[in-house]
Length: 286
Image (cartoon, rainbow, N blue to C red; front, side, top):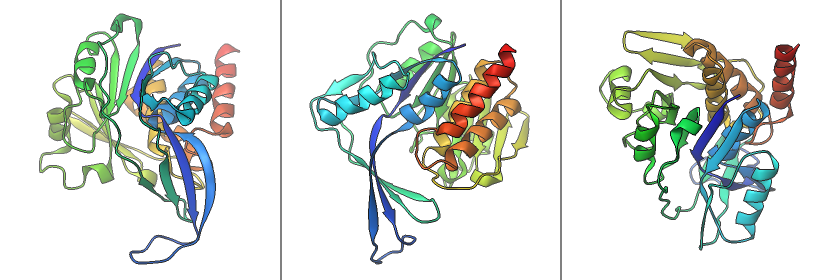
């Protein structure tokens, strides 16, 4: 299988489950769901490990008990953490406020400055995934493009994201630009862009390319927790692409992984996805 390098956050999530939907000025009761592993690094990487890929994570955590716990949990789940960075500050929890309908509001602390080291030897990596505001990410992506598949999530601002495949949600795109989706994607990803994928939850996703756009349906699911659905979609998409799928096939795989994610009471992938991948690998080996 493929060697995949992720530049993404690794979080300690604390879940607060509300008794009713959020409303300005309201008062709410909550149940404390405790700590759990989260962040794009874990949410994306674990499924890729279960799919048989070698996955390494580049992120940063503090030099404290929570940081130690995050690295231990992530390593135990099969993600290579040798490229992780440590900082001296306390590792703050990410607060996930969950409503009864499965929607979540994220409250996060300001992150310390995260600067990537010199880029690795990209000939050793089949794919690079960027979902981080780390300084140096643009340089990493540009040096990786000639050698590795580069997939990136659209940033919260209009910063550069050099890549072959750019992913965004419809919500991310609201009010961003008057350009057509493809032209906007080019303005972010550059001339290397081959596909700009805009997801829209249960409405599916649209693949924008230079001369076409194609809709790919979502997979139906019983929504329990939407946290990590976008990360799972990206992981399924990457899995499809590195095994040689066409874009629409890879998007369908991403939709399948996202459906497993929203039906699971966690942000990291659940047992249903693991079982699905084990069955798929058994079919391939039969």
